[in-house]
Amino acid sequence: MHVTSRALALAALLLLPGITAAATSSRHSYASTAELHDAILRGTLTPAALTREALQRVHALDQRGPHLNAIIELNPDAQRDADRLQPPSGARAAPGPLWGIPAVLKDNIDTADRMQTSAGSLAMVGAPARRDATLVARMRAAGMIILGKGNMSEWANYRGFHATGGWSGRGGLTHNPYVITRTACGSSSGPAVAVAAGYVPVAIGTETDGSIVCPSAINGIVGIKPTLGLVSRAGIVPVTREQDTPGPLARNVADAAALLTVIAGSDPRDPATADADRHATDYSRFVDPHGLRGKRIGVVRALTGYSPGTDKVFEQALTAMRQAGAIIVDPVTIPHLHAFDDDENLATSYEFKHDLNAYLATRSGLKVHSLADIIAFNKAHASEEMPWFGQQLMIEAEARGPLTDPAYLKARADARRLAGPEGIDAALAAHHLDALVAPTTGPAWSLDLVNGSHFPGGSAGEAAVAGYPDISVPMGFVHGLPVGISFFGAKWSEPTLISIASGFEHATHARRPPRFRTAATR
Image 1: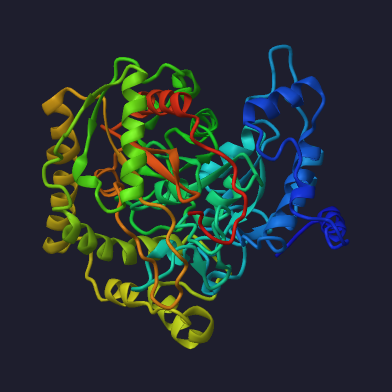
Image 2: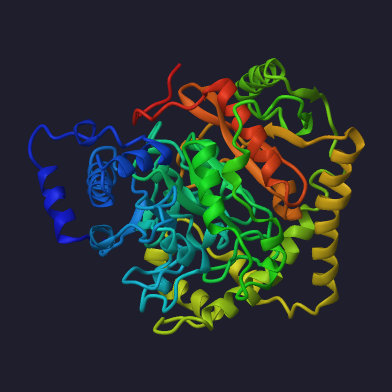
């Protein structure tokens, strides 16, 4: 892990007797970006001081204390970047709402600096990327500080069966800050924990199917999985171009909306974003404490029932929504629910090889240049890369044919149609709904590297396969473990969903900070 000399000096302080994780906390650890921005404008806080605090907290909690292991690599230039940051000049210039704010990126996002972009794999360690991912360039232009890369489920959980969420060969296992013996979910585990534990107020995750909303719910934060094509994927290690999308992680809806505003927009490097500029906007305008009022929201009962404790909290959430003025339509059926699962799996298997090989062609100085190379590397370094689970998914993908195969074309078209126009869209239209709602997933399950993750169930699949937006918001707690609620809807419906999610957040105030326990409560 790379750190600056100043960060090392701060880390040394933490070795002194009596210096605990709690002692390294400051009043900024759980501050919102609005509070931090106000302090910066008033001159009581500087980006340099805020970055120092963030580095100090990482050293206190990540490799010491509860040993959360959320950060795979710190940016060795983070403090320098913060020290050199100058506010915009000019009569009308003023720092934007995220100017001077530190953030963590998932380790599959390119940065043209001294950090690796490895997707958690030792096979990808080598020369750093030569160009920032488009979203990183947007963040830097907004004055944000890239604090480091977050650990993740290696290859975004697309390697083998019986994988454990949040584990990578390069980064090890990420732990849940609420109960450290429990999962942080994946694949955006590290960035989510970095936000939940107060390292940074915002971070970037990526999702193919559940990898933003699951770690958000499990770690008690907000996650926005945007419409596919709203945010560029250029410079991001892919699983599949047909479902992958980056999105913001934050402790409240307003911060997530502010970050989405920064990263959204069209990009010539990603043809899927051709229409993004027509829809991208200042999403902060839709944050509304009364956002539930008059909204018609359909309850998808078929996406409940796998966790009694979560179901109980969900019923309380529905009551709170009604009291806040929402019109709850209960139940609502999504046609073809999960009918696309086999098609999704087949199509993704084809796309993974094609899209990963295309990404690797943009990188130089790596020891691998294709999926076949990665498979060979994993086999040659099995003790480090495959101590717990194999690479069956990669082997299957390598055996697939081109994207012109009729079987592939039919599978992807059927999956998209069943999840989108004939699934979510049909349910919304049948009841004149603004959004659909269900629990995101159950409480965090115990870590089990031997048998892999024990995922109970969740609501991410429909929006993920359709390419539609999905927002997870803290809903409450089950035995001291956070659970989330998901609002999802039609393509480009982020403004409506942000309004609903912020209204729910205001009505419930469900989030509370982690306490780094070692066991769930009774």
